[in-house]
Length: 365
Image 1 (cartoon, helix red, strand yellow):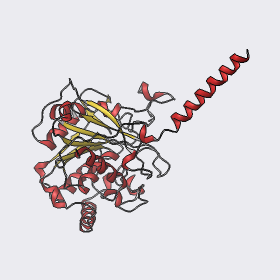
Image 2 (cartoon, rainbow, N blue to C red):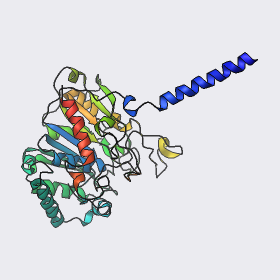
Image 3 (cartoon, rainbow, N blue to C red):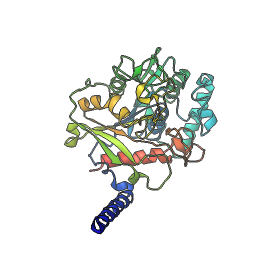
Image 4 (tube, rainbow, N blue to C red):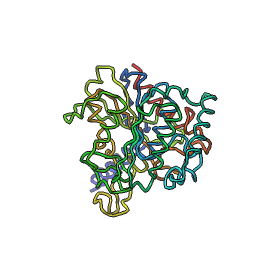
């Protein structure tokens, strides 16, 4: 009997030690590092949805010396909030109808000031770029006028109109449009914010910003890898999650490829637990709600078109945080990381800088 008790205690002790060992493993050891793939250092493209759409525009303007094209889904113009939360949640989103041409002129003036101070790349770099803007006609989260004013901003910045494609789908709400995955197209602001609208939003966008483009390859042989993001920001509190994703087409393991970056929207990070407001999506209807996990990175269609065109897709990930205060896991388009000001939209922005360092890793041998 004593022997059994001793064995039992030893087992408990072993389990306890194993638990301590697992929980004490540094976060940087939980995931593989982002691989170096010798990707092209220029010709980078970016896109994003909602807060990620704002972030895509910010990254495009800040790094226009290496970024050649942008896709902005359900978002607004560069520097829209001017570092103010109230402006971000009103004029830039639900009250975007109040944005007029004068406001856009002032935003461009501020961008020129940032250019002069060296905080963003030269605005003249934008003139040869391609811009794709998608918006739903019944989007209640970011009103349609935000898309119109985003186009106007780029035109004022010198981008020729024939290089800007504004795609308005009147029946669509606030979501990324796909050909056959997601909610009904008319659904608005519902997780996972992907809508079956009968159009391939990823291909339509990529075909415009790249020019000649091959259709989707459904027998994709590349790999979606998860990697450690913490090595790119360390202990800084910037809202970034511990891991991110990168899709590497088969050919990009041995050939030089271009890079595309996709920024997800609020509550779309892998560890987010979104809430379905209408109770019409079984996966998100009843507590405990499901996590997004790989829903976004696997279902918006980017991996398939990337495989067919030898393009590496980087999916940086955010998480909800209290410091900085970001309870919905949104990309910073109002200055919550840098405590106000406009650095969030420049090369000095914590999030943009972190993603730039990821890009440098993909470029290096």
